Length: 429
Image 1 (cartoon, helix red, strand yellow):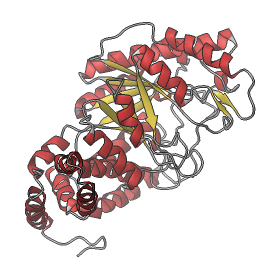
Image 2 (cartoon, helix red, strand yellow):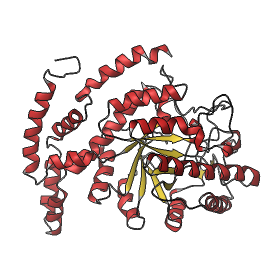
Image 3 (spheres, rainbow, N blue to C red):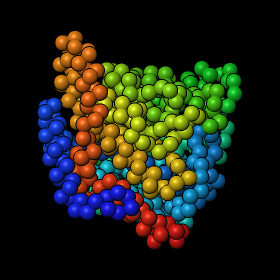
Image 4 (cartoon, helix red, strand yellow):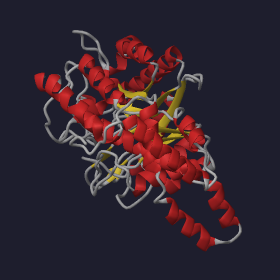
């Protein structure tokens, strides 16, 4: 047994444990082989900004400004350029089962020694990312970057009363949609382009309606050109409050819900953008009752508008269960959104993604039809009892089999890979 509690002959023991788990789940009418096959089609979008603390590659960037976002900590080994960031993402993906996507912000454009303003960005500035993704057989999602810029220092971008500032950001939004559409077409995988803006203010705001009417018109301009949905999927993301916008956020949940439903775009629900005691799980079926698709940012809010590393907790599991019970894995796009600079950044990616995948696997292993049968028959005691019994079924054995079949480390063995990578790569930066 090694220091992480792993036993020799891993493959043999995993397969033996899986055969037992397979029989247990079969007694509830669940075919684990089919579930493992289904897991192959699940794509999670890994956010690039976890790897460099949301710094980006703009040559003239002065760091995060404009409010609404901040990474804390100074763990050694932050990626400083595209090559290092892609290298780190590759290492993370080696330790995560399945085939997934990468989520890019516009501030990760690679423009050589020339500074390219955000309203002048083109798809060529992301060619290295596209070529890399193509070589890995993965997709790319995209985000315009409305923060960390002098034009965001007032706290207002698309909802700014200053026409010149507003038009700058409108053009940026338009160009990002065009870039995302071309990326989706090039890779043959739809690119989700998500609009989040930090607009709001720290204290009381009198002209709330005015800013929201301005934002509505500005978004209409951004979304004015139509693209093939096989290449581009648009989304808008709400927030309850943020850093520098504690009292007023222009793009509230109610605003974007209304906008999404009247403009045929997706709404993005970020688990860290609501009150810490408010779950987004119940919102999923509500939105899917009216909108055909939905974007989720799986995160972990802790007390004050934070984006902590995702773990397998009640909230993460509830999100996955609601997607499964709504039969909506083909309608819901799942991305991660957290940034922790206080721990090894690759460890954060791996922990968060594996936790999200575990929650999805548990949800798929649920004998939902059995629960529905009891519910429809009015046997609510049986329904509750079954839900409790399901919690102790040997899901871990199925997870280990999923990792083994995908040639990634089983259990905590991946920590050895991180340690070696930190010694050989990260410590040299």
